[in-house]
Length: 435
Ligand code: AMX
Image (cartoon, rainbow, N blue to C red; front, side):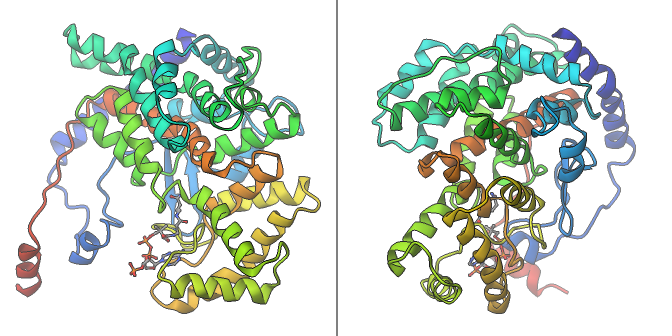
């Protein structure tokens, strides 16, 4: 499928000269002031990164190359009119910058299917770990172990010119994304199904094949998996998994290293791990309340107790968003349409009524509204994927598409190594006291 690579280059190569012109002719232009507050609260709001694949608006949510999630759910190609779009189409959009034709999406599916072979030593690395090792530990170790396959690394060692880096990066990225469903499903079957593995079916699409290899072969689960893989794919460049992948890649580390590092960031409870933490927290609540159907008042009381204990309410709040996450809304619409009665989904819906006013009343919380993680676990659980310690791996498979599409762009632009400055606390105190 060389034509997709060619089309990417054809559509985006003009950005190389635009980037160089900006750097040369407008390098002195002041963008914004940076406050001490921004530095001390996680560099929020500082325009410090170039990311073309998606942009997050605080009051609207994510847009992928200008398209919102509702727009994409209507416009991206799907396998049948009732289904969800194929994530392959979103990858094409993020990479090439335009909505693909159905044929392009089918071709990416086929391309990934031909690249999906995972070398045996990667499975050996996974098998060497205890089954009690967290699924994200196994997942990131497997990704790093697969760096033996990096064509970019080999090309770099052989001395290729830097203007061709993106080309080798492209092949690494396509191979890597193609192989992640197999690795994820292998870990899932190893940990929860006594190593009874299921071979890939190359006729299936990328997300459908993941559901199949996990042992969830129904059309319903495949539909959910396509939605899940689409909405978790990218959230502009500053979030921990995207920024880490970009930062490590800026040292010209191969994409396996860069993604492995990004996945370790995704595994943190304030980031991607929140999607499994939501279900953990709900089960803790049910145990504490000794019921499977808590009342609104009981839930309110538990939320208050969580805050009093100095813990966060997982699935709520966001570093950038100031409204209900449209990824939450997409999942809620999916549940409203397809799920008639489910206790966990009902609890998640009640939490949506209960949590925002409580968090809003705390005073210091910038965003009391739900994020993507508030809903995803309940949907997976409903469709029989009940092993919640595994959920962040699914998030990681999806997130690979956005962060790795960006990594190809990074090498196309020829972005340099990233190296911001740091100062001791004393320096900030001095700045605070200067007029
Ligand atoms: N429950 C309790 N307290 C919360 C909270 C929540 N859901 N969200 C924010 N706060 C607290 C913060 O911990 C912080 O407390 P502190 O001043 O005592 O340290 C204070 O409110 C101010 O934080 P903020 O400016 O509103 O948010 P932030 O940018 O520092 O953090 C986030 C954002 C997402 C980490 C935070 O909202 C949070 O911890 N949420 C719960 C975990 C979660 O759902 N994470 C997933 C995010 C989406 C994703 O990446 N997948």
